[in-house]
Image (cartoon, rainbow, N blue to C red; front, side, top):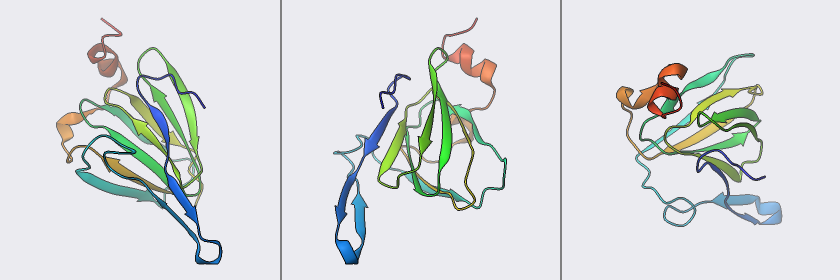
Length: 140
């Protein structure tokens, strides 16, 4: 799938299928992603019809992996937008700074693992879409 929303991209990680021993998937900082990881978090047990996200980051880069289940992630740079379905544990979505993103359609068993380039900082979040458009230079 070609993603055309401001430097966002799908990342296929290395996968080794060892038959009866299981499947091992991994990614390496500096090889698969080019930012230092400062924060790791995961999201799970999301209720039915609940939406998460609804914000953009000023500086933080993230890679989201859906380790189990599936999720729809809507990404928007103020001009281009698209919906991405994450449903493979060996494929992640890199979300650049200044990308509005919403997550919805969580299956009951969904587990999302996120690697972030920055420590948590409430001031890095843009939670109002009109403010996001202004900061992104897409609205006066």
